[in-house]
Every structure is written in structure tokens, then in C-alpha cells.
Length: 299
Image (cartoon, rainbow, N blue to C red; front, top):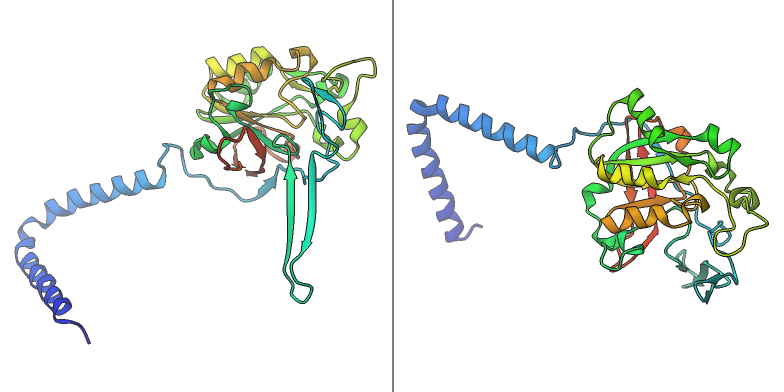
């Protein structure tokens, strides 16, 4: 049974509705015109809040390596890293049994932020840069441009994505879309199950950067930063840099400008060079400099 207050409110609404119906006929055309325009405007802004066209897709490509304790990293056990020694395990998984009589299980996972398929946030190379939890959500869903350098990488493990590669991509596909993510496809992710082939070490090198892998050229990072509207870059290797960029130059150009990127992407050969959308499931812990992510391409 309804309370007197509810019944009174129902009576008021019905009375208001009757008064409206009596007076609405003379102005229904104007109201309809204004109302339809208002509704159309509201629906359009709700559907595409960022001004981008809606995304449609028929398949999903997982661009993420499965993270395991033995997945290759750019440093290894016992290596000196700027005066500190790398730990024995960069990724650890400890299993706990909650109750042997129930089906529940629990694992404790610990890892360094920059292992596996992972995000580099701006503060990875800039003390005042945005942390991983501060990357705007609308940047994590972006048009995907894939630049294919597999031919060069097969001949030279230190091949780089150059400005000419970007211009060639645009000559074929048109200008890079505003707010896009640019990924290098060197074919290197196919080597990930073979640690030595993936790292391709230079036996004569010393220091941090003994491995050889394709990467971005610093001039390309500057081009994408200054002349294109690119939110993020990605590679299917350990790093945006290799020894031809002193191991750090691309990081130091790109990240301090509050840009971000993803390293160790997988299966970019299954994605078209243009037309797909990337979805980056970046971790969101306060102050993080990056972290493992689930990255998908919608095709």
C-alpha cells in the first residue's frame, strides 16, 4: 500500500501531465523541432565523446606475450644496473593453498614494472612526468598504425624505424590519424621463445646494452612528437631504443613530453597496417612508471 505522500506526488504528476496535453497542441511542431535537434545532438555527443568515429570490428588480435619468470628482459640476473645488481628473478609466482577441501586457489605475483608486454609511462624517464595511473583513458584506445620493417630487420638486427618509413606509410594510407598509436613490426616477437635469438647478443659488447634488436630512430620520435598527433609508440622488441640511439635517446625524447608507449608487443603481423584500433589495458597503481599490460587490436 502506497503512503499518502507517494499518492499525493502521483496525483500532482498526473495533473501536470493533463495540463501539458491541453496546451501542447498549438506548439507541438516547434517543440518537436527543438526536441529532435536536442536529442540528436545529445546522442551524437554521447556516442563519440572524443570526436572519433565509432569503432567497429570483426575480430580481436591479442598483442600480448604471456608473462613468465623466464621471459627475456633487457637485463638479467646479477647484471650491474647503474650501480645496483639485478635480482635473481624479475618475475616470481608463489602459490598458496587456501583450503584443500575447496576449489579456491590464490597466487602471489611479484614483478619489476618493465617486464613482458608492458607500458612505459612518462615518469619512467621524467621525474615530473605522468605516472601510469595518470595516462588519460581516452588515449589507451586509439587508431593503430603499424609500420612494417621486417625486411630490414631480417638483414640487420639494429634496424630502425626512420622518418622515411613514416612518410612511406602515409603515402600509402594517408596521414597518420590524430591521436593514433604507432607500432613497429619487425617480426621480432616470433623469436621470443628462443632467448638467444630474441636477445641476439653482441658477444663483444659490454655494459647494459649487449643485445641487438630493432627500434625507433630518434629522428622518428621527434617527428611523431612535433609534426604528428601521436599519443603512443610501440615495439615488438625489448625497447624503443637500441645501441644506435645510445640505448636511451628515444626514451628521453618521447617520454618527458608526457607521452607513453608499449614494449614487447606480439603478433603485429596479424594486424593490418592501417584501420585497426589498439586497446591498452594499462595497470593503474599510483605513481607507477609502467607495468605489464594486456594489449588488444580490434580489426
